Image (cartoon, rainbow, N blue to C red; front, side, top):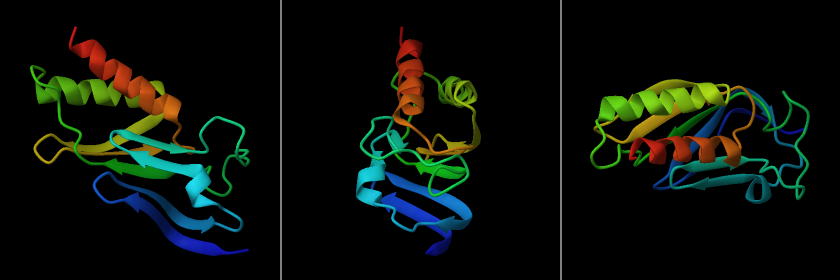
Amino acid sequence: MQHVTNLRVGRVGYRELLWPGETDITGVDFKSIVTIGFGEVSVYNDDDRVPKPPVGTKLNRPAIVTLERIFSPEGIASSRYENQLQQSLTDVGASQLFYSASEGLWSFKCLTSPTMASVELIQMRSSEMKQ
């Protein structure tokens, strides 16, 4: 077994994921499992390419996600946008750690690996605010 303490995986210009504590990375193919893009993050995307391990093992455990360049859309007050971001996280079982409207930084904690579905919900909710 290969363990890493406070594992961080990131992408310049988009930010990072942090798994606090000890993480067993034996056999983990990060390129196949982790996706970090603008406003999105996914671990074990819900396709069948790489089976998701049991909750609490490998990368399917609590993680802290920090994204950058997350600014409120034009015409939407930053406080309203932050409230919508918080609600979107609640809907997927995650919790906000902080949001900095001036810096465009958003950090939240997921109880298991974040999926594209959770990010899509957040993006959908943000677009609903424009209507």
